[in-house]
Amino acid sequence: MIPRLVLGSAQSFGEAFIMEKSLNLAALSRRTALRCAMLLSATPLLTLASGPAEAKIAQTSVAYQPGPKGEQQCSNCNLYVTPASCKTVDGVVAPAGWCKIWVKKPA
Image 1: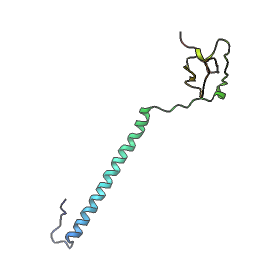
Image 2: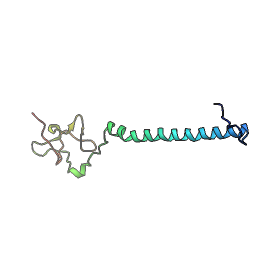
Image 3: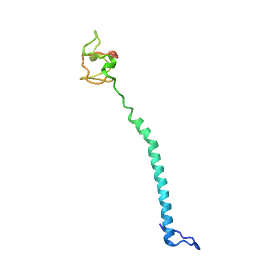
Image 4: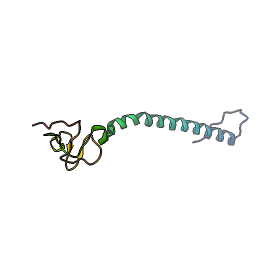
């Protein structure tokens, strides 16, 4: 970029060049700030698109027991995931186990 000199000014070519470069750096900083602001404003949208991380409930909170309660057991619960886990309860879950959030599998 060629620096512009105003005729009749007391500035030398070097002073005008330095002034022009410093103005460009200020414009670049604003541009960079605007780009960062745009990226930061899009960050929540990206976070929502990935879905919230869901925490699982501790076994003690749902009164988990390794044995069944009558006909109710983890293997016939809608929340059970084979081979030994649950969609909502944390940790290893036995197929014959039971907890108070047991939900019957649809037929």
